[in-house]
Every structure is written in structure tokens, then in C-alpha cells.
Image (cartoon, rainbow, N blue to C red; front, side, top):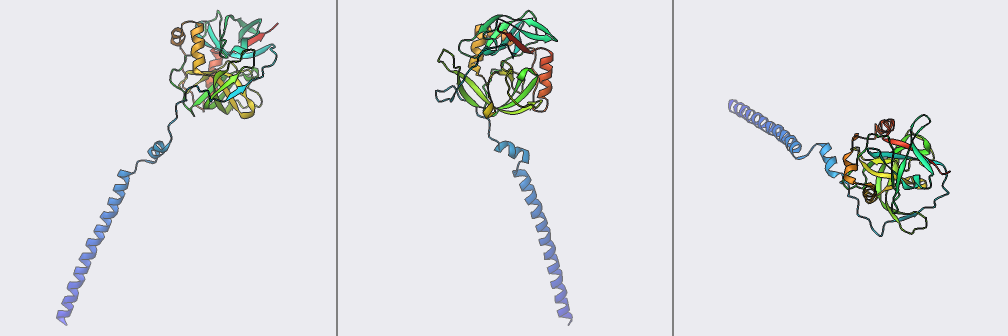
Length: 288
């Protein structure tokens, strides 16, 4: 009896010791598993960033770019938008100033600053002019545009102040529908948000600046495709050509004084600031 009891006691001790050893091993193995996962798997924010497709640079102008044919109506007294690009120098859309016997920018209640020295671009829907009043200027972006990047359009659609957020879709061309048969390269943007929100046409924002998130000019609003929710803006090639025709482009670009950071939460406020400083101004045109 004593020997069997002793053997039973010894067996119990051995089993207890082995269970303790294996239990400790299991605990260490579980901890190792956690450590190995945490070291090999990046934080979720990094995973999202790595899986997000980088924005593709806008391809060059191509003969395959789709063409929108315009049907311009009869010119009458109208309003548009312009923005300051240097001391007394302004840029707008060509069709805003075509046919105007006199024109100017609104600088206050029933106060107009007369414009002069109009320079209409024959190949792009762009124009420059001058005023005696000097307004804080905006600068131009030299970096290439990217598919999907955000843009912010400022001006006076329907003659009222507003801002538009859009996203870059790609290149298209427009046929002005005039006596000339040439087509103009432009950039197509998908309208995303209006601030304040309003229905109907964006007519009147033509000539207004299109800015990136760093506050640089990347285009000029020229055409609305309302049925598709698209805004067409001047291509970088057109802006470069217009600056060259207006004078020394380096002087125009070096005159930059305003460069606000813009995002979708406060772009409406940026628009108000630009209009208040008159860097973005309403243009009034009289044809007779």
C-alpha cells in the first residue's frame, strides 16, 4: 500500500509539473503571436494610404480628345468675372469682353472702375485688360494637373457671389462655333458642390479664377455644360499663351501676393475674402 501510494504521489507531482510547464509555454506562444502581428502589420491608416491609387498626371493634348461644339448667342449687356494678375492687370474670358463698347469692374455700390487696353486671345477663350486701380494679385501654378484633383471656382454666377468645388475629369476641346474653325483645348471638371447652394446656370462665373488647394491659379472658367454637370476651364497652354501676349509672364507670376490654403470646408469663406479684396471682381459689359 505504501509503495503504491508513494508511486501515485510521485505521478501526481510529475503531471502537475508538466502541466505547469506546458501552460507557461502556451502563454508565451500567445504573446509571441501578438508581437509578431503588431510588428508585421502596419497601422490601418498606412494600409489605406498604400492601397489608395496615386493621382495620374493629366495626359498631353491629343487628337482623340472629345470635342464640344458651342452655339454662341447674340451678345448683349452682360456680367462676368475677372481676377487680378498684377499691378493694374486683369485676366478674364474672351467672350466676357467681346463686343463690349465699354466695360469695367464693380468696386462698390454703383461704382465702376473703367477697364481699358483689352487684349483678346484669338486662339483661347481668354483676355486681359487693365485698370488704374491696383488690387492684390493672384499667382499661377506651374505643376502639372492631375486626374481627380480638387479645384475651386470663384466668381459671380447669375451675377451673384458664389464658389464652386469640382474634381478634374480630363481633357476635351471646344469648337467656338464662330467663323474660325479651330478648336480650343480645355479641361473638364465635374461639379461637386456650390456655396451657397443655388439652382440653375453658372453663367456669369466665366472669366473667374480656378484655384488648387494651395491657392494657385490652375485655370479660368469658360464654359458650363449644365446637362452633364461639367465646368470647362482654360488649359495651361492657353494661360501661358495669354500671359505671353499680355507682356512679361515672369512679371505677372512674380506679382503674387495672395496664396490662401483652400479645402472643401472653408472654400466659401476664401471666396468671400477674395471678392472683398476685389482680387476677384464682377465685370460689367455694355454693348451699346
